[in-house]
Image (cartoon, rainbow, N blue to C red; front, side, top):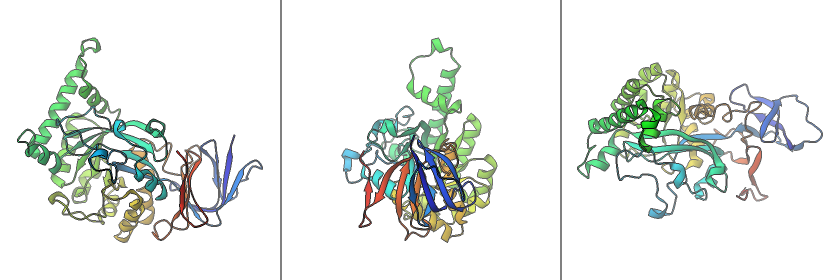
Length: 390
């Protein structure tokens, strides 16, 4: 058994009060933490010298590995836009763990991500939650599938409208989604022996049975209202991805108990449906009782800037503790992984990042990163990050 003790650290567990003291982890799990805990004689001891220890950040909406940076068309596998319904397509089948963005994530303190298909289709495919360090994607999986990605608004309307085929309008996009669910519900109603092979209905059945959430790309408030409407009709677990104008109807989103993965924040108003984007939104939504996570949509915003977005939200009114929770425990819980990651608690995975100081002061760098108790990044004598071999 391998026991590691990080001593003399300023610890922010997220789920409990900060303290100055020690965190112990053994065989990949948090074993103990506190200001005065005993360190076993057999432990490997790391003196943090007052540095800040936090759980690894979680980005619940990225395209890491499916939209590879600097690879052009050869690394572009985000959307299978040959039919409007691609429910059975799986992001995991297109992820390249050698995408440079995974190293950027680690350096930026991001230890877990949720990789989504894109938003070109009304129904885009199955997402997967991963750690950010690994040689083969299967070894990085935390949950697969972690949700089924769908899209409302401009993207699917534009893609299929340009082809002059359904769906070319917002009502056509909603119809496409409803029809797919109706087909899947009819398929589920058959005796198992009578069901024909139908991978699309099988994938959708996992949403209808609430095994996985429906990840709804939506920006405008009217599209968000449509997302709430369809979710109520079919009774599935809804997560709002982006939710640009969700703050305009925050009371309705809160009443429905629907979490919002808000962002990206550090972008221009590149299309009509994001013209009301504001860094005030995460704070407004949190104050209304909505569970908020902040996302980069990498590579739209480079993933190492996740903490910069949280700091921007604080600048515009969000409580600092809420902002840190929005990139740790909240997204972990939305991904169904709150019992494993997102906070420093006994029994949870030892996904930890040691920072020079408060990470919301973006001048501070990550110093060391652990995933499942294994150190995956440290800094050399020149201060340059060194990523562990995959």
